[in-house]
Amino acid sequence: MKDNQSRRKKARPKKHKRKILVHRVVAFLLVVVLICVGGYYLLCAANSPYLKIRDIQITGNTATDTYMLDGIAGPLVGQNMLTVDVNSLSNQVKKTLHTDQVSVIRKWPNTLIINAGDTSLIGAVICGGSVLYLDGHGNVADRANYLSNVNLPIISGIPDIQNLKAHRALSSASQEKLDDALAILSALKTKGFIGKISEIHWTKYNTYRIITKNNSVFEITGIDNFNQNKSYIATFLRENRSNVELDLQIDHHAFMKNRT
Image (cartoon, rainbow, N blue to C red; front, side):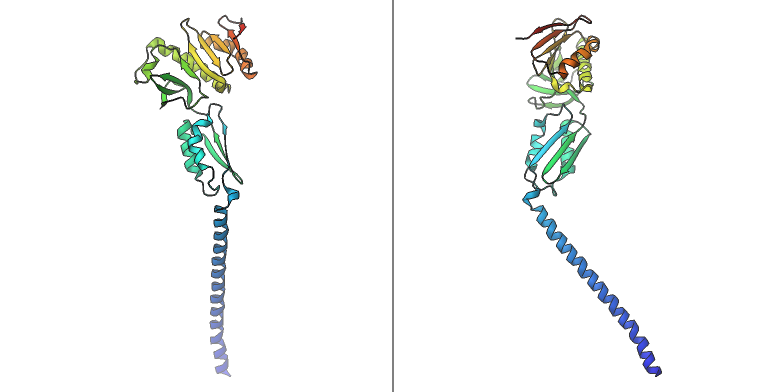
């Protein structure tokens, strides 16, 4: 009797160990199956035409010219939404647009949205066959062989502006004119109108001509004169008025005529 009891006691631990082993083997097999099934569906998704990028939308800053991003975003069309490197894309857009405010969003099943925030660029100067992109402080932030960002206004007419290409300082008079032009553009940018401006030109009559993309012109004497008329200018820009010339040099008096 005692021998039978001792044999039963010895058999119980062995059965318990076998059960544990069986449970572990089953659990391992389940994990392997889940990994295989998940990998299969992930592989199918990665090769699915349903998840191929068909559209890339660029939103945000009005100064952002989508043409500048065509070389970056274009090759992504046809790639899979799951495998596209959004971090690399975001870094390339930041570098191209001179902004730290970029987010890339996957809009399932086949659209990428690039949201670009404020850019440091405010205008462009064309001199000596080159395009110089300026920030709000008048620093040359980038150089190009052609005007790649058509949403940024051209700054023209300022004497000695070509010195910027050679990294030389402007004369004090020219620097003052450039500072005034940048201040005007900064004010327009703050109001969200910079994308409506084609050019700001310093004339031989010591005035600025702000030329819109709708072929309207505002003529002012400087930033103070601009500030006194900014509400009036904003109304015209908001209404997208075209082919109108406004002389605003005399405070509180606007002389308007149609442009032919």
